[in-house]
Image (cartoon, rainbow, N blue to C red; front, side, top):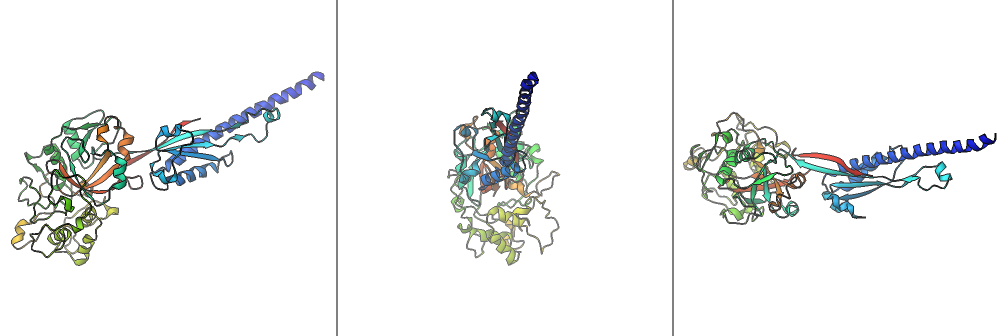
Length: 470
């Protein structure tokens, strides 16, 4: 009896300790799972939008409401870089949430409700857990090229849709230069050009991509200008491997092309007319600043020479290419927000339907939207330009409006190879519309917008994963 009187309390204490230990481990595991799940849920909502942080917190809190640990209180910290979370108390504000890529979730200290350990005065009965998750977007099926800019974030914040830029591909890496990219494991002159020419580039911005600066401007022109049904370069027909790729469905260039063997010509002040340039580039000064354009294409000085009584270069373009259309359609072109919107309207498309294949064959004249390329009779008919592809000899149909789009990573080219990470290159990807053929590497493009998770054109791959937890 004496032995039992002594042994039973001890046995009960051991059982209590075992039960409390099990409960403590279960609580610890539960909180770790809550922290991990909340971090992943929050990271999944970091979409670089204005309201990313409130949405991220709401997603995490919604998860914890169903936790068997009860409504666990959570603390959040957000950062653009993982290293920022090493600083105590650091967190991005909601106003800067668009730059967040990392989230840290910490649970509040939680104790066992009633425990034998507490009766014994043991204080180590509370636990907290922490987890960090990242949200990264990686761009794929993009143009294997960079737009060189020392401050990509500034470009993304300041560039206005509709503004025209004069980019240069001349082997330099100055601001406004285009530089081609090679995959990390392979790379050659031909591969770089084929990736540039194709309508479906199998290319992702990856770690350790290399810049290629030895492509000649003539070869670059050939890979770009097939989009305009230009299969002859300054040195003759383009290479057969590049000639396999089709043009865009609307190849209005504003250049008098008597035959498919005609050599490239410079911009002409006489008809036929191309899409209007920003007035800064009417003279097309090769030495001009790359960003002189101000989006003023609707009020630029008309080139003249058509005989039409027009007030702007836009009206001149419409009068030359759409004189057979009704006033409602012409008004839609005049009110188009950008050249790209006007181009889509000419194909019977909008921003919402820009991926729909275009088939302009056999369109009834009453519903046709394609340009005519100029008057069909009279003295000016000799300058008529065929708006449909006639020089392409391959088998792929010319149906993709986005053939006239370049997706370029805006990056500090001078920082290579250090800047050659998938994360850096995918962070600022611009969408640019080719407004006319390139000439000796000089490329006129219109800025359409930045590729973002909420409007990514199917180019971004979202990866959410845990970085660490404790």
